[in-house]
Length: 354
Image (cartoon, rainbow, N blue to C red; front, top):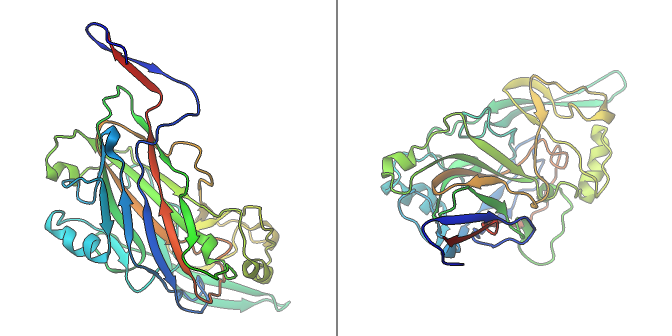
């Protein structure tokens, strides 16, 4: 930093060296208990036990569940995110899955004025045979409502607030950091069933207000037609032995190491063919009810711009039922951990007083 007269200058440095100014870690312990079909019967049970977060605030960053109380470290359990938070954030609409995660499907936000994912579950399974005894499998999709807090939902969703004081004239870059993904949480485990590879991590960036904004303004930040989203698919190219074997029954060939598209559900409907869009099946993509889920599969690029102020996000963790590994998944039981790390890059700004 050089001392000069009068004003502050910023220079942009182009390169790949980043300062890890924000590190937020979610350690979500999940227990896979039931042994059953996942998407088709919706009886898979994955318990979310706890969630830890850590923020390195040396760069002026801090984190909050209510937009009022900001810390370097926060730890969330069902009691904190759902119950205790009502004291300082009475109108939150957080979701928990105390009875276990169940497969759902989503393309994310409906448009740039949507602050929540549009998420669908399956309420019925139908199987039909054609004249060649080939079995076709259909589901009934229904939309979940997140208008109110719910402890017994099929997925986890909660609001998250980041306070940024970089002083930069340009927004900083927010990244998923190294280590973000889904991991086995225990010894002597293997991924035969495929649920491990169907996990998704999603975020919606809703908006930013000045740091000195009152609580009512912060907690009620709206999209103003500028909401953005990201869906991270950490194991996009991985397919378990069980998934590869069972995919043949649905007319799909999987190769470990090669990603397959996910045709997620976009609207409610009856008798929706679960293999729609997959080329080998001969079932054309039903664009009215399905769409390609746009995911990121690496963490090399920024996910959002983070300006000075308080920015509201919504975070999602779920099992994607339309993932090719979960179309018909049998589980023998797993302990999993979901880790989400963030960091903020301000290495592009070298400043000094002039």
